[in-house]
Length: 113
Image (tube, rainbow, N blue to C red; front, top):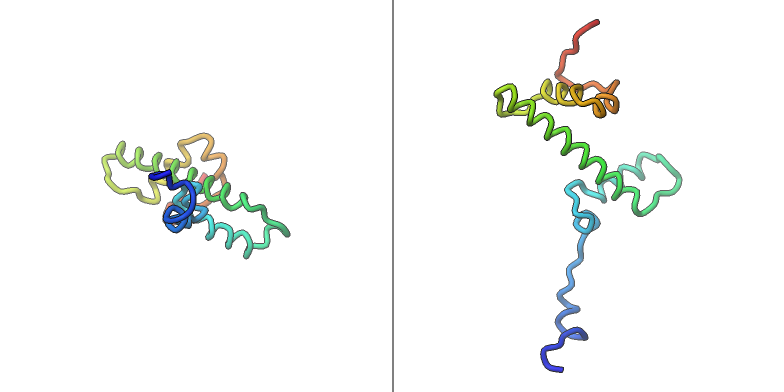
């Protein structure tokens, strides 16, 4: 049939190779996360979807923290996200403060109790 290019020719040659990051619609590099997982020797075997899932979780957490820190910056009248604002954003959120309970954000002086 004329006009039907479902078979053969030009459609096959124009296929584009897409990375796992593109296929997962992520910003964080899946290949980089996989390399870090393999070099860290966290497990003997590594599933093919493990680095994709971990990259997605890291991207979500980063976006969430940056959004909260941006809100803190706007509330304080600033235009920049600074380490103290990151610390404030994490510790004002119940779930994030529980997750990062013992983490230290550099350049932030904590109050001594």
